[in-house]
Length: 184
Image (cartoon, rainbow, N blue to C red; front, top):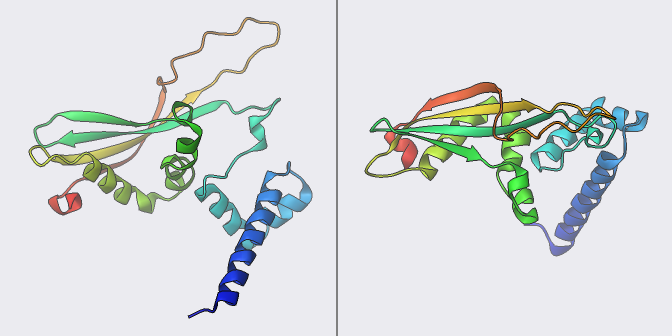
């Protein structure tokens, strides 16, 4: 068992490392940042941690090169009687600040997409979340939807805003067959 002093030292070291990493993460792209985060093993692990923690961002969110993609995930749950339900993992703009930060969105956008090994477990979670003893789920399909945001042309009128739920590019990630033991 660690003593109180050792625990305090470990906590302080974690806070110091986390704050240092946040500082390095938040500065604009430069050579020192590239060397520390991309060319070292510890740096690559730090990038994975920052994205997993939901702290991932890009300087592309600022002009002149703003992101031109909008993405979200949705699941289609098929029940024993053949009915289907679409569960939309709501985008961040549909939430208040605390729900933006403390939700599964971080899992979907940052961690989930890069780790296909986690997809069956997420599908089981979705099946349990929508479990109904009289009509249990038999399959869960998870789809990644992507929409292209057209760039604005200076001097031209702003194009009408498309429905943000219309995502023309769909990539099926997994279709999971749910067993009875998955629902317990």
